Length: 118
Image (cartoon, rainbow, N blue to C red; front, side):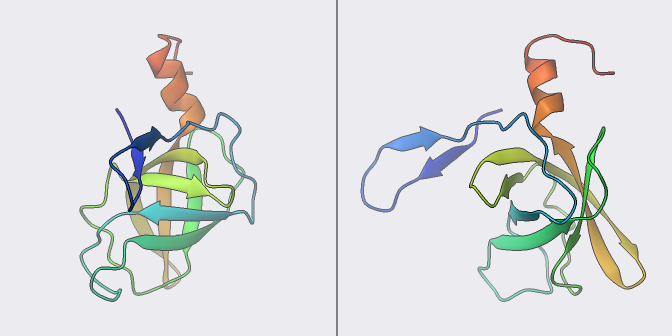
């Protein structure tokens, strides 16, 4: 997997670094993806907040309750510092809110290094 930040003014790109430290409850997240609906056309950055202490997954709630994220799986998820904290996997709805399920970067790093995914 490779994710790159692409500049507007030159052809150079910089690799996004996987952040091993998971975000905390209440931290902001941004899912960068084209979604199927519930947002203005062309909007690619979708804010969410972490709602449970991260363990095997990072769980967040999107700020926009009308977002339709079907098809956004695999999108990068960044924290407020602009570090890559995970990969968007799925969504669910509960009490009128759309929840995000994110595979944490720490788990991805384990897989890259051939460590057990326990």
